[in-house]
Length: 145
Image (cartoon, rainbow, N blue to C red):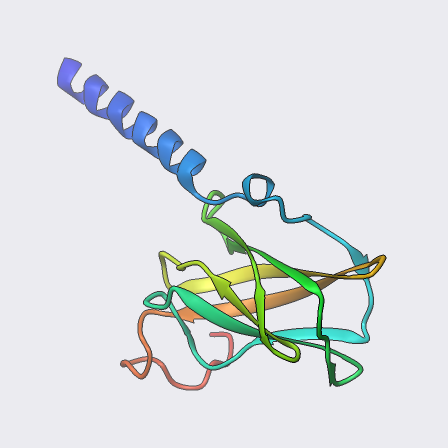
């Protein structure tokens, strides 16, 4: 019984430590929310996999690239509190921002892109499906199932 109690305590401590280690939006300095503006949109380019450590995000306003903005990405796995990531993007081409982080698990992630340009701070909500690997079994067209 003592061994079981020790295992439970160690498991709980490990879980608590893991929650603190994950990049939370507050630790990275990314705003959590901004104004809603449907003229802005964003999407990750290509298939997003848990193998990647860098992702390219395309940000547009009325279909035109948003250039020269501060772009911050906050994301959290659906149904898994503590599985969140946050990163600031670097503009690589007009409206194309590279963000560096690695999704640890495949699944769906709620993502909030905060775009700051001048005094505008806009929140762009996204739902991202992260695959185990590019081109692998089960990596057919996503229909949300």
